Amino acid sequence: MREYWRGSVEAWECDEMGHMNVRFWVRRALDGMMLMATELGCERAFAPEATATLLPIRQHIRFLREAREGVPLFFRGGVVAIGEADVTFYSEIVHSLDGAIGATFLTKMAHAEAKTGRAYPWPERTTALAAAMQVEVPAHGSPRSISFDGPTDQFDFATLVSRGFQQVGLSAVRIEDVDVFNRLYPEGMIGRVSTGVPNLMTAWREETTAELCAQDGQPRKAGAAVLEYRLDYISWPGAGDFMAVYSGVADVAEKTNTLKHVLAHPVTGEIFCVCEAVAVTFDLVARKVIAIPPQARARLEARLIKPIG
Image (cartoon, rainbow, N blue to C red; front, side):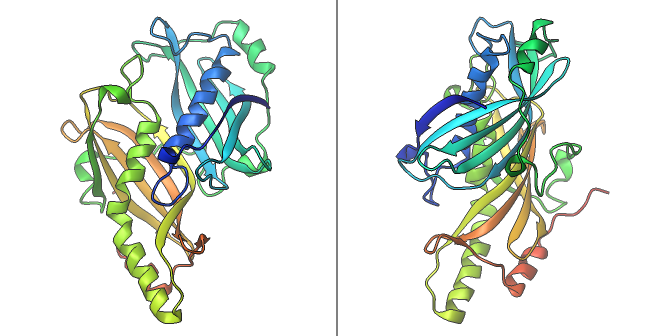
């Protein structure tokens, strides 16, 4: 795999967990994919004058090792598959000092008309260019708990609350949030989920860690870390639009919980993105995963979202 980005973690890219936030993992990955696109013949695909561009359709992410302030990183990747008007990239962000994998990305992108977003078939030369970039998905980058190929979850905006989803985020899309085609940058989707989830989970996490501290006297501070994500990008808000984030608990296991998120326009109900995440409760003192005690698991299970139908 070739290298397409190199840099380090800025202080302002770190969140309350003390490590680089998911928003910036996605931003750095997409920075790298923009350069990857040039090797497919798309040298100006993200410039204002472009007639065709690349738009993410689906993205699967595994977070394998956190990156804290000042840590040097680089991005590498290649092509897994090429379709008539789409491409699937495999890529990973790597810790420069020891070669440890920080995060992996499987990203399907549409080759689309820049202004309309309609599919734009590849020129004939692209197949040969893609073959020169071909890579296999390694075991550490393969989906584990969330399938890459499964169907996109279907949601009716009008029934989200009755199914147990909670509105955890509400924000405007500003001019600095969008690209040259007036589409929200992809990191704006996962970033809004990240800032919204504390409204769903923080009280439960703090209650759980307080109970554990009372039992054994060990100091703990509640946090969280995401292990795996899948995002399905459906439509793209522009500057002046608004976004609401609705989230719910889909599953609870001994150490993990699965959350589902729906990003939609709060007035029209248009759905922009749906995503699923597997997360753990994280002790910020020991920087270790906390197993969920039975009583805490029961409280979370009582909040499970209802299935469709």
